[in-house]
Length: 151
Image (cartoon, rainbow, N blue to C red):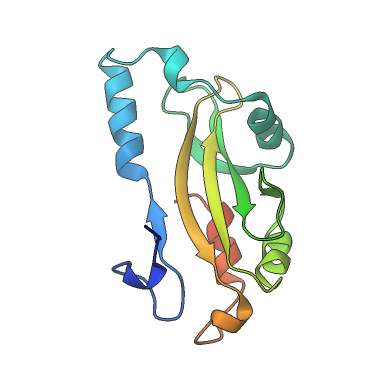
């Protein structure tokens, strides 16, 4: 089965849909706070993800829902044709803009990470369509902004 962004309700015509994982996040946090999930199960960020969060992540205004001591950081990875198998960690909005112009459909994954306690959760995903597949010419600045803006 393949994902068809045109079938996403609420998506803008000519732009790909965005999948937000807030409900899954809230459920996981709720289960943790009820004591049904151990802290080690939710605070398990891998070393490379923590390194990206500390060095190139986009700071947010959200307090970590687990340790409640630090702000979470947003880290964006892009996957697609001609990209490394492990994806490309996007460090700036300008880099996201450049990647979106490379001629291939790309998928962006935004992960929220707490560098302090190692909490991590997929926040949202969205597609960066190849320039030739856009039915309108969107402001390219709006797509990259979604990669890093907390909300």
